[in-house]
View 1: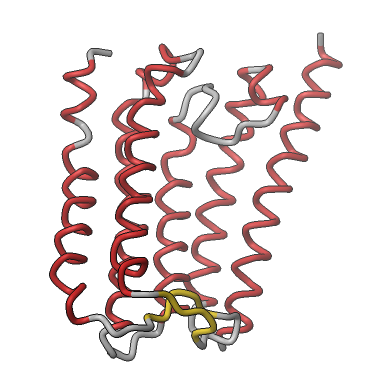
View 2: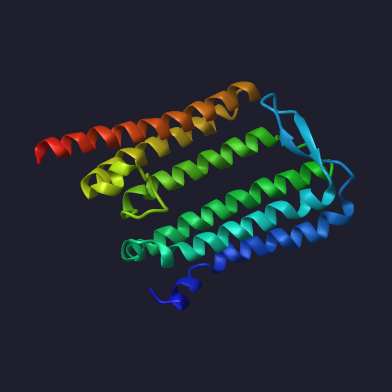
Length: 219
C-alpha cells in the first residue's frame, strides 16, 4: 500500500485530533485552577489537575496514538494482511480517536461547570465502540497489532478466523450490556463494564487456546 493512499484514509481521525486541539485552545482561558480529571466508581470526581493538563494532555496523547497506528501498517511483519483490511483498519482507528475526543470534551465540559454524567457518557461511548469493533472483527486478517492477538491465533489462521468470529459476537453482546448497564447506579455500571471486559479478554484467549489444541489434534 502506498503511503499517499494510506494517508488519504486518515483525514477524518486527523481532523478529529485537530478539533480536539482547537476546542482545548478555545476553552483553556475559561478553565478553573482545578479541573476534575478522574472519577471514582461512585461517579463522583476524586482527582483534579491544572488547566494545562486538562486541556492538552488528551489531545497530545491522541495525536501520539494516531501517529503510532498510522505507522503500524508499514512495520507489521504481516503488513500484506493489513493492506487487505485497510479500510476496516481506518474505520476502527477513527472510532477509537472519536472515543478519545468524546471523553476529552466531557472532561472539559465538566471543568467549565456543566453537570455532565461522566460515567454514563464513558459507558455508552465505550459500549458503542465495542459494538462497532465487534461488527468488523471478522474482517481483520492475521497481524501483530490489531485484533485478538494470542500466541495461538497468530500461529494458526484457522484459529484466528474462528476466534474472531466468536470474538465479534462477544464484543457486540458485551458492548450492548455496557450500554444498558450505563443506566444502573455508577458503582454497578462500573463493575459491569470491568466484568464484561475481563470476560471478553479471558474468554477469547481460552477459546483460541482450545481451538489451537483441536487443530493440533487433527494434524
